[in-house]
Length: 417
Image (cartoon, rainbow, N blue to C red; front, side, top):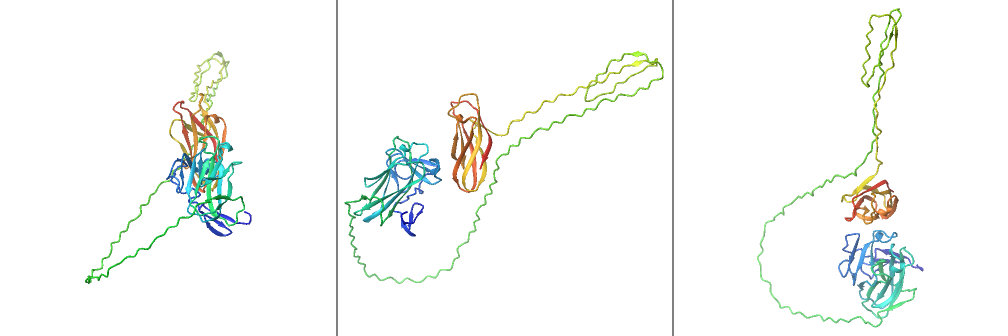
């Protein structure tokens, strides 16, 4: 920038024109913290190393607050809450204060303002103009050496908005300021400490004669301790196969009608009732013809009764999750690294009005998206940014409100890209 080549090194160092410059702000990227969850609220000391707050603050992973951030830790102040750090002694000269920041995606920009001050002097109030990650550079002048107090305070309109997102803070020596210089530490001189070296008198003491004792050489025992090998079987996600049923219909053969040879006589008229044939087992009718005169024989055709089969009913393929079962659906995926798109069709199988129940989508047991009953009948599609390469587990976690009836979520066309 303006003829200088800047290279950032994880919030601790900065390279200017190839020369490594120490960041005078300790833990400037907030990576050293005791928060083990995706986000934590804190007040006072102990949560973020070398930083303290005078009221409620949040520290969390950036992607939870803003789509342009990844898994790095960011600080989120509320209105009037301040986080501070006591900087080590600064010699007189010029310095560059660089603040990386962004705005929370679910807050108005007016709730994302924050103020930067040193030694109680307001240096600048920063108001984000959009939701992208920005960098603000402020040139400051130290007329007399001092131990400055650096503060960052939320200056949004509404209380408890946690709108401003501070990604990193750097304080660097700067011999060539290009912006308007802000004076700090005007009238404070560095303390002078005089330390006198004490004189210690040691008496002349003769060492006694100690006989030499020869001990046998003892070999220390060797312990071979084998590290246990833990074989953890891989857990495969359940596969649901919906097979189309096969219907076997019996083959029905028509009955055999015997051939009757009559003598050459005049046949009488004989009325014989039609036999009823039951399928599948059909016995041919037996006709006894007495020795009579030749006549006319009427033999009606057989009647076939075919069985009736009901057509099968198959359920559409998908995932059914009960709202109050306290059981989740999980499946492991292999990611190449980068943004991951997840989509599915969402349906609530209930005729009652619901409002508080929900379905949470997680990656490695960390919430990335919330689906509410108002999304019934919609195609849900969202992007999880900057997911590291490797194996990750996607989970579907139901939440059933105790004041609402039991029902079922139905998901279909589940895609991960």
